Figure 1 (spheres, rainbow, N blue to C red):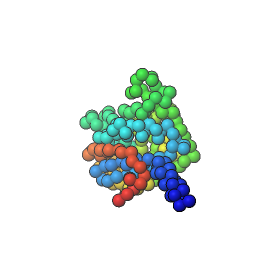
Figure 2 (figure 1 turned 180 degrees about the horizontal axis):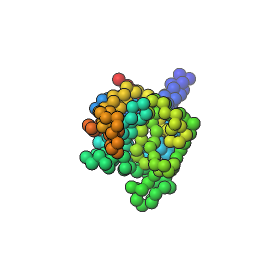
Figure 3 (figure 1 turned 135 degrees about the vertical axis):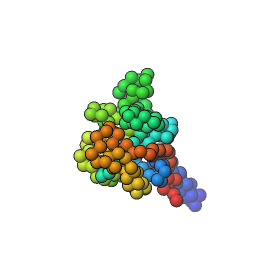
Figure 4 (figure 1 turned 60 degrees about the vertical axis):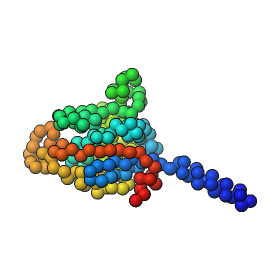
Length: 209
């Protein structure tokens, strides 16, 4: 009987370990943000982000758009380029989701997965154009609650550790910080690059000190 109980306990422990959630660790020069995912409400966005992260797609890209009280945005491969005018114009989905040309990965996009999940401080959500089905690799993290984005952009995660990193990033120097009247297209782009590296880890590994 004792052997049976032991076997059952081992089986339960094994199952619980095998079902442990993946999280993303977004590392910057200011520290790390740990992000949990919402695959129940945005499965395609979570899958795409995870695929790209495992490919190393985000590594060396930057948070290129910083707006205090709003968001920090990143995920554009063009931010590896020194030409700031290219920033914010690139990206693709991690796999073919039915939008774009299946034989051309650079055209892959993600359909909208809008939900009732609110945009609050630390929310991970996906950038897009005016087309609701145009998400690619560019994402943003909310610096503060942004209810104007609710049900219009796909929420697919939340920062669960490292919220203070958002504050450090968003307060970096940029043209509009120096001159609020600046009208150039790069007004929200930081002068110094804020590069990232994104790893996918098990929750317990990411949260262990």
